[in-house]
Length: 157
Image (cartoon, rainbow, N blue to C red; front, side, top):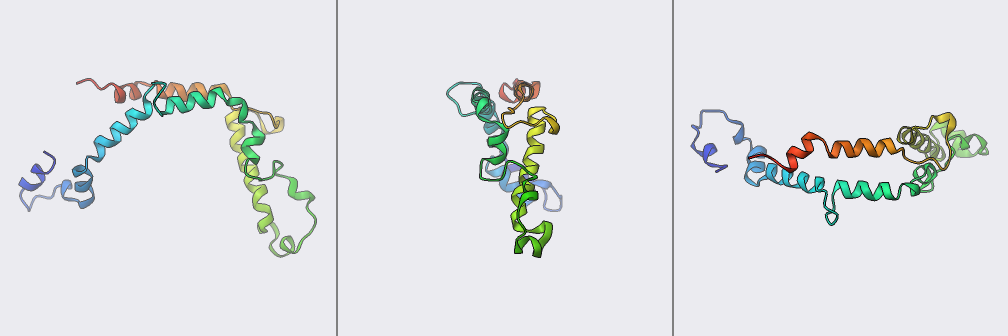
């Protein structure tokens, strides 16, 4: 069904299905697989690994995702300004702000900015125990329950 129009079209007619990449994707059912994968991710069943189940698990364990765990989970410093108290070293003297020792502090600062948005807490009021805001979960759940998601999961014939 997918290859017949491509083979029956006159050779002088330029059709997109003759693009090798597009033809391959059509032949292997790429679009159909993607729709099935998205439907699976949107499944609300408790025994299915889906976005809804992942969201429910994260929400149930929200207390574990503190600002401190988010920022310093891999050994990066919690305090992005901690570099100011570092003693002068040859690295710092040679590389200045580009010294390898500073990269952890830069990443820490970026993670704080992201968590500021997730928690809804202004940077001036940061606390190690800040949590992801309930509003974030509400927004994500609304996306999973959107009309578009429902159409994907329950298409009308």
